[in-house]
Amino acid sequence: MPPKARGGYSRQETEELARQWTKVLWNSSLWKQVHWLGVPVLQWPTDLILMQELITRVRPNCIVETGSYLGGTAIFYASILNSLGIAEGRVISIDIEIRPSARSNIEDSVFSHRIHLLGGDSKSESVHRELQRLLGEEKKVLVCLDSDHSYAHTLAELRLFSRYIPVRGYLVLFDTICRELADTPNGDPSWTHDSPMTALEEFLAEYPSFESDPEWGKFLVTFAPRGFLVRRS
Image 1: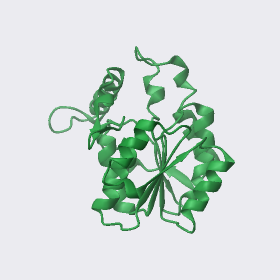
Image 2: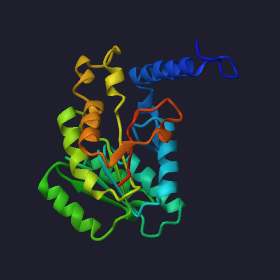
Image 3: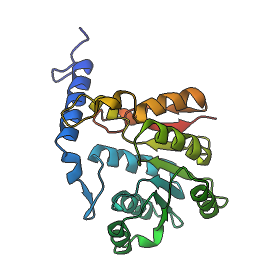
């Protein structure tokens, strides 16, 4: 057996405990209780901490996200950009349908001037034409994908949004954990193949300039295993 870490658990045991805890917290919907400044974000706190660290490191001028939901993550990203003093920092949040509650939450936020909502299919030419217009010549872009988690949709998003990532920049794919959740009581057996991880594996085989950065798996409990992608060339 691997040597015990100080405190009594080996690395293998620690990873297995983290894996089981991740499945339990997802299945029990604890993640739905997470809010940022009063708005639901539907993320686990460790992933929000990682995103804060990533944003601090790469200091993007624009964060593009798919999957606006109620606007919580857009407000979170905008608040971090504001705290870092990135004067022109902004968030473009894309969803196939912008909920009135999302628009209201963002309008009521002190960071509303940093957030632009873009309605439409994230795979469509019209959305990408508008996104390119909004980005202009901006190169310091961070992309976060968290919309439809089917294999086909996720792979299409990865292919389309990877074009916006500069060398040494990041694209973050959330909910790669779905494959691990397929056997939970509230999971779906189809997630073993019809999920973001399958799309991620295919994307990485197609796009060798991207790779999963293992640094961002340091907390073990995450909804985005292998999902922090860095562009190396």
